[in-house]
Amino acid sequence: MTATWSTVDTPIGPFTAIAADDGAVLASGWTAGPDTLTPLIAATLRPAGLRRLPDLGPITRAVQRFHDGNLAAIDDIPVRQRSGEFLTHAWDVLRKVPPGQPVTYSEYAALAGRPSAVRAAASACARNAAALFVPCHRVVRIGGALGGFRWGLDVKRWLLAHEAEAAR
Image (tube, rainbow, N blue to C red; front, side, top):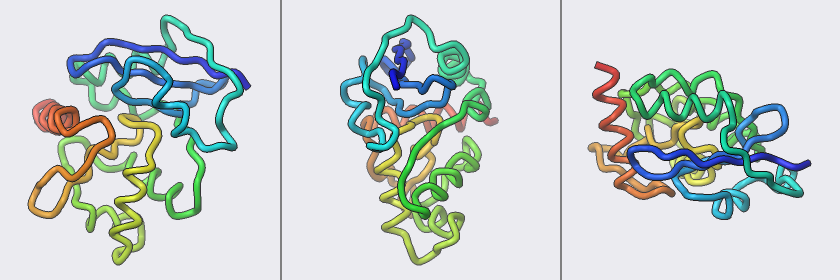
């Protein structure tokens, strides 16, 4: 399979998405190209080749609209990730965390049905290949500390502030 990719400018830097033929996001994040994203895609989903497009249609529009304040714009974009049963379920749960209402890693573990699996919940965030569309930035430490984020704490801070402001 050959996947397509595109980069769009956002207020917090370039954002690149890689999409399957059917329009599902395979990987995405705040980077200027696909090189850092491709290794994040599960081996069984990793494309044999990549083709750059100026625009990925609904994906590009959703990224632009989200950054412009339409937080729901990302909700209907399909995402395809593969891993074990818990991680796959945990990524689905992340898509249901409302913008402007971050949860702690402990709360996230409970939402995913395994309240004692806080480390596994944190691992789901760390292994998430489809940043923004699977909003792992909405998970914080107890007390509100940011925790980690593959794309940097400045990006996570901006996203949380943007969502808090737009959700008002």
